[in-house]
Image (cartoon, rainbow, N blue to C red; front, side, top):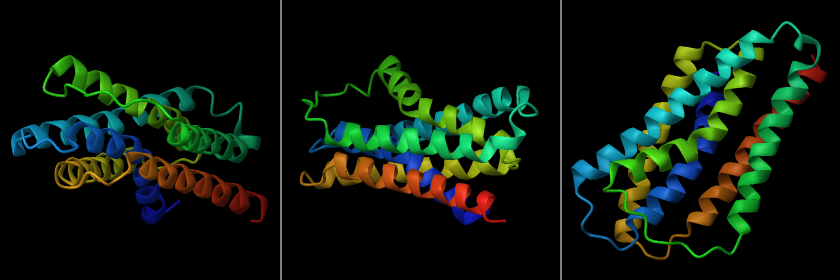
Length: 185
């Protein structure tokens, strides 16, 4: 897997963060540049940290799953992608998120990065350079979250659900690519 695919995985994983960033800032002018940077950094940091945890877990049982690791990577990416698609179509009332409170920001950061931990398991079986991979994911998430905050402040017509749809489709597509590459060497 090359850098373009890792960037796409980063984009797919960052869509939850983008959706939350847009939701946190919709129509709010009180979000300062410093707060926007703090939110984006928190999301990027946890999106980079969680795959490392998954990668470490994956390394512990990698030898047992070598023969079907491509199916695991495909399955995990598809499950997360489908989950994102389902969440995008749920008709839930969005409540005002108090991201100025540290506990709320940390909770949102962890909640939006759980999927990244699961994807990290597939990184172990794909034998990716974990430092480069999580560095890219963290930077991509930071930039996308920052963009989401500013888009939410400026535009009230952007749907956070559309971002989750795109992210879900991207993750499913990458899962299919991994499967096809391993089935047709």
